[in-house]
Amino acid sequence: MSSSSQVAESWISAFCSLVGHEYFAEVSEDFVEDDFNLTGLQSQVPMYKEALEMILDVEPEDDYSDDDDEDEDEDLDDDDEDMRDAAAYRRQERRHMRMASDLSVMESSAEMLYGLIHQRYITSRQGIQQMAEKYEAGHFGACPRVYCGQAKV
Image (cartoon, rainbow, N blue to C red; front, side, top):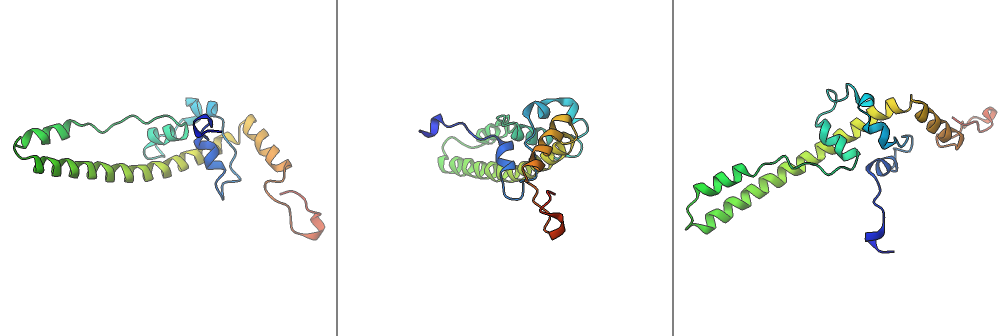
């Protein structure tokens, strides 16, 4: 099977399959997309919009404008190619550093936002059903005490 025919795993599925995240339920995208379920979360999560886009696997909008870059290019003489190349390289490095730091903040914000959404989801009818299925399947383990008879926890 070629890599182009494989279906990409969603952010939610990937997050829930990480080690230590086995207790998380996979929240449906319909629940995440419903604004009512997200009420009040915007003030609690930094970079809320970007984090939500990451969770929903939406391509982020490019907020970085190239207007500043064009202004810097106009200030340089046309004769000085080396200086222009060096300035372009520095701009590209700054943009790369800014994007790398933003990405780590976005990832942690997405994890925080998913945790908050998960809290709300598992109190919904669908979430309770999903958590009950996890309990019945023994996802949370069994009591180690002898007299418990391996009761599910």
